[in-house]
Image (cartoon, rainbow over all chains, first blue to last red; front, side, top):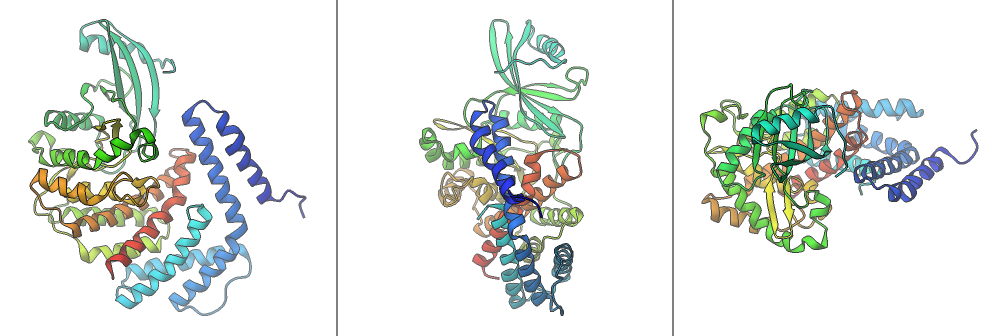
Length: 127
Length: 339
């Protein structure tokens, strides 16, 4: 096990350093804007490291219900990641094939996808 | 302006000397924006006792976005709009000889004011400008859409034959999304929703193609000029009316549906009064949704430019994580319409 600070704590320390010490000291507006983007992106990384596993597990369950797939979510994070990616690809294929065109099916898909989008936005710091 | 001297500065001076007929000296040069396919410079020139504040737009010959005009074409459109009384930066000179600055370029007058969207919607000093903007934007759009389409503008992209502008734009976005190869089910769902609801377009016009806060120069009295004509094309006027209403271009002032500066209704009403056209509110809502879809696909594409190594840029990379904003907006807008 690694010592503290944890990865998340280190990322947060760099984010704060960029946002509160580097950015205000920069005279060049374009560079300052770039540093603020860098700080924002580190915020995304910090949140993703913290919430990814739980978010993926929730998405797996919701998409499995929408797609009617059996079984349970993979236990290992790397496999869970690829499983959810495959579910997303399958959802795309079914949407393109018209499987959710009927009003009720459309509403069900929209509700499921909304939850996924809301989680992405939470990670991205946009909600 | 920070002085710096690219090796082409003397050749640009020679070009300006030849065009103006008096000795020209570049006294200030600053790169404003850059990218893979084009860049923009602020150029200050002393010439015959006069000081010219100019903007230079260069073609870099990289991969040009689908449908974006070349600098030569953009210059021609700018001249056309200027001659037709649209408020634009005065076009000055076109340089097609690559020997001058290495690539084709043009020069136009530099407008004074603020164009950065997040400042336009917030700065206290621009409160009066924001009050005037909706009507001024309507006035300029009415003029743009009244411009004739002479044969020498035949290079402008047009809807595919037998397809409406809406269908052309929707299918292009759907195809681009498919090509990018990243699964975005919410966007695919929006494509399915939009497809059976395509508005007709009885008469196509010259469309600016990127008319929104961020591409408008704004002074204390409001609109000073409309720039960035590289996405001009022949299309549906509702596209230009809806694009400035897309949430992303409200720059955080979400409750002001017209670009974070005002309400859409007075903008549409003024446009109707000046243009003599009726604004079809359903068509506007369709184009607003399509605008969200296109910008979502645009964000995925921008991130891919970074990921593919074509243009290494943190800013482009970060856009990939904004796609969800447009996805949520699309789901909200679809719900508003009722499926």
